[in-house]
Length: 66
Image (cartoon, helix red, strand yellow):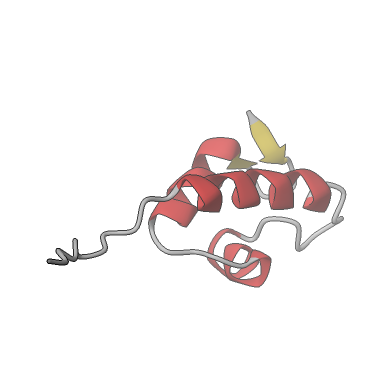
């Protein structure tokens, strides 16, 4: 689904950006151009990004305690 019509940014693009390490809305704008034209999509774009970031799994080492 298109989130930002002005710059043709989809929800998939936002999720992919989160998977690639984007953590803030400013980073998303820099990488995709999302919401840097009319700004009408900012609320939805932030929502999709927040949801995607929450689902990103971090590769943390497993600690074993005795």
